[in-house]
Image (cartoon, rainbow, N blue to C red):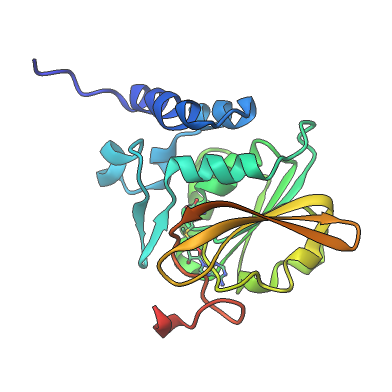
Length: 223
Ligand code: SAM
């Protein structure tokens, strides 16, 4: 009657099975990396018991680590090459969890965070796991990181009213940009793909993300 509390490892395995595999996360690399990398290592210790629940969690400064399903869905949507040689840009480092997942599927991850304390915490979280192919900078990610472009994938983990103009310009041929856009409280997850001079846009799902703050996003006091 009083079931034993599942260990973190058991909770993580269950998360992959019930929240990801059962909901059409089919890319075996995504499922494997999410089964291996500990999400609890990216939240405060008092939240470890909730780390494998189907929900975003607070990481301080009014920000969140995204729901595991959303991390898996956005990663899968990038369709990174199977050879592991991709260069990826993430905007909105937060806890560093999404960057860590990407780091196992790509050769190099560049990640931009606007809040210096979160960037520092993310660096520590990644270092603790021995992840050394993620470079973080503190900046307004709405401009992208043109010095390292073109990218084989760009993922934006905060919502902008519209796609920031500098980002599609930093995509390599055939590469995808995955980004939530739309009004403050409810957005649509878009996927844009560069095909020659054209950008093909697809709507993937309704979502709700924290705002992208800055020149290409929202003003800080608008939310
Ligand atoms: N990917 C993160 C993770 O795995 O923990 C979750 C990110 S959280 C949903 C969104 C992040 O975007 C916040 O940390 C926020 O500070 C950051 N952010 C908001 N506007 C930004 C901007 N213009 N440039 C860079 N980061 C921004």
